[in-house]
Length: 123
Image 1 (spheres, rainbow, N blue to C red):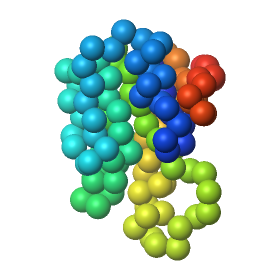
Image 2 (tube, rainbow, N blue to C red; image 1 turned 135 degrees about the horizontal axis):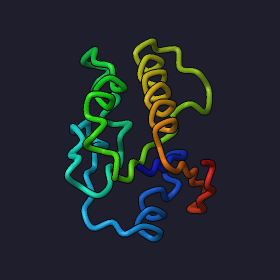
Image 3 (cartoon, helix red, strand yellow; image 1 turned 90 degrees about the horizontal axis):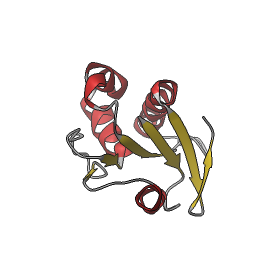
C-alpha cells in the first residue's frame, strides 16, 4: 500500500494520478465508506469525520479491512497542523485522523507527503 498525505488543497490526488497507474478512484471526502475495489481511495479524512460523529474508531475499521487495501493507494489530508480547535468534537476528529495516519504509515510500503503539488518520499 502507498500512503499519500498532505495539507488541504495541496494537489495530492493530481500527484497520485501523475505518478501511479490509477484507473478508478473512491472519494470519501463527503463521509462515504471506502470502496476498496478501486485503485485509489482519497478524501479518507471525510470518512474519519463521519466515524468520529458516529462514535466509530476509523483505525479499527481499517484494521478489520486490512486485506482489502494492501495493494491500494490511500490519500488523506493531514489535519494535525495549525491551531488546536476549541470545539471538542473537532479535536476528537483530528485526533482520530492522526491515529489512522499513524497506523496506515506503519503499514505502508511507501509514504509520500505532498506540498504544493510536489511529493517527497518519507518511507
